[in-house]
Image (tube, rainbow, N blue to C red):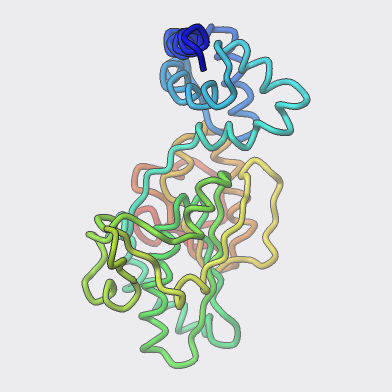
Length: 290
């Protein structure tokens, strides 16, 4: 690369970072993101969206948000770019044993009822981690259920873990995490279910857990129907990004995929208040299908 080419490249890179997203482009993006992915994008999110899209502008060699917007809505962009779009739009905040009260409720209230009704014995208990992000939630569930299995002869389970982002699902399937991610995992479970790298500060989930979790891409906006109704659904801190109408539609979909007597766990910052759903509350943010 000669000096002129280098200066041109530096100028283009600087131009990308100085560029601002116009209101028209933001409006088109916001409508697309909400209609296709359910995520609400009020005007206050414009700066955030602009910042996250910089990665795609650089990757595609584009110099303005208008150019990127036109590409996203083109025939080629609809085919090639939408998956990348959702990867940069979604928020993937999670960790092992998040919201500890839920694990106590699962152990103290839900699993005794499940066992009493014979679920998980004649056929595996069906559990769904909806919006699983990078896998910490389904692997936490697998640790808990494997410990339960060890003390309840004949019990078995399987976990379906879904997310809309292909990129984050690939991370979840690799099951490799920074060492500090294990800080919230009880020591006895670390020893039993984690493999520690000898060369790098990394941990890996043991195969005995990985084989119990099946990862799959799923868009909540689709009219989905799972192969089997679920006994327990965890969908926590996902619907906070949706508007109220979308939340109502989505929770009805969950209920349609939840077996009678099955349990639904939602995030502590979420609420089903005022929604007409076939469920009853059994504990804070925990509901049972009726």
